[in-house]
Length: 226
Image (tube, rainbow, N blue to C red):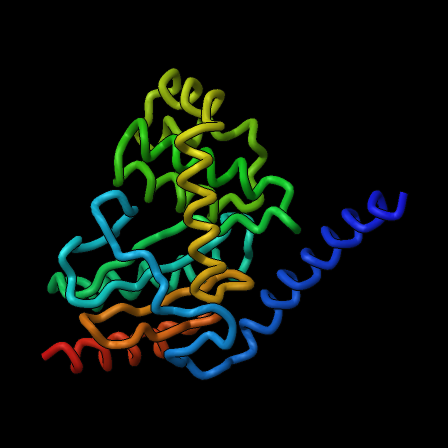
C-alpha cells in the first residue's frame, strides 16, 4: 500500500524540479563550461541525423534542447533565428534542435515532439523547421491541428498521419534519446543550449538568453576557432 503513494509523490516532485529549473534558468546566470549537474562534455556529437539550420559543417554549433510548449523556448526560438540570419550568413554558425519534452508538466509535450519528428521523417529538414516554427507561433497547439500544420510545412497529410499513428517505435526512441542526452549534459529545464566549437569545452546557456548575449558568446567561440 505504501508504494502506491510513493509513485504519485515522485511524479509531483519531479515536475516541481523541472518547473523550478525553468524558472531559475531565465534569471540571467552567466554562461559557463559546467552545468553544475551532469556533464556538458557528454553532449552527443552533431551528425547528419540532427535537425540543423545553417551549414552542417559550421565551425560553431548551437545545440538547443527544447520543448514546444515552453514559452521561454518560443522567445529563444526567435532569438536563435535572428542569430542564424545575422551571424550564420557566412556559414560559420549553425543551430541544432533536439527534443526535450517536459512530460512532467506539459501534457502535450511528447505528442508535439512526435509530430515534429514525423514531419522531419516524412518531409525532410526544411519541413521540420517550418513545422517547429508553427508549433511555437501557435503555442499551445491542439493536437487536432497537427495534420493541417504538417501539410502547411510541406508534408504529405497521409504520410504524416501514418507516421504519427505508428510513432511508438523509432520516432519515440529518437525523442527519448534526445531527452536522455539532455539530462546527461545537465539540463533540468528548457531551453538549455550548448555552444560547440572545435575541441573547446562546451559553453552552457541555461535559459532564454538575449540576442546580444548569444551573439557575444558566438563571436567568442568563433575567435577561438581562428
